[in-house]
Length: 335
Image (cartoon, rainbow, N blue to C red; front, top):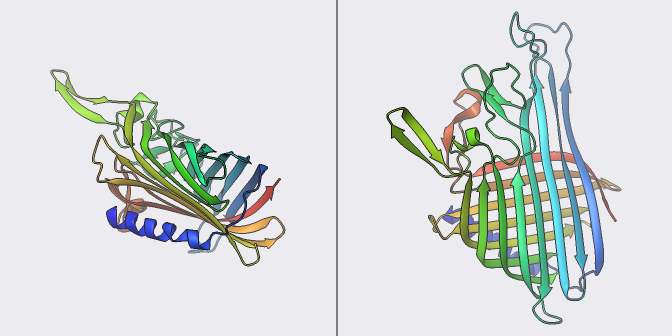
């Protein structure tokens, strides 16, 4: 991740030259948006080789609330991306009563909040407390021996524990540091004292040891059993760059939030990356076409390794850069 981290920093630290040196807007600024994507195909008595029914829908809800005074700034954002899809129709097998289920395409909840007050009147430096929360809302089930995919229910009543669910896992970060805010478009934050907690609030899920919590195997006369922690507490340094830019006569917008974290307590040379980007273009008033692109790497988290030569495009677990892209039609308002 060293080369990627250097590239990301070079890109974003070049952005101040694009920022406009203008006075910040005082008071409240709030807004919300809802983006949708839909794909659908229905065939009744289809011809041979014509394919199968398809239904997919997803969306993203985002909101923000910012408050600025002469000496302080408070910023809060929320983003939930969610999507489902189903291929085919009818029951999953002859003699079964279970219908072909929906599979999860994406489920990610992000909440960020930051409060700072000026080092001195008129300064562009703020002493700041910064926090963030990352998890998912719905459970994810997998049945590798029978059905490929990620499902939101145990549709075959197997009694298996979900692979993940709300707060299992979740990542919470809290840091104190200094924030450089030359204008409303740019924020550069650094904290030499940043805590990070990877939470897996479920025993069965925590025992898997794939979400970043620490797991060790213990053998005794009764067999081999995992010993695991449900919370992995870390202490390190955090750098965060937030940038927003309007173009094409304010019809286009770009918003970026890059976070780089190093854990003093374990492998500090390996940097965790969380880079969220949103590019939008207004096609008519309050309606946008929007592209969301997230890049994620955590040195403690195992992700599914993409390999299109394997079933369902997954070849086991490993530490890799995870990339998520979503194209949406969005309605948004600022008030």
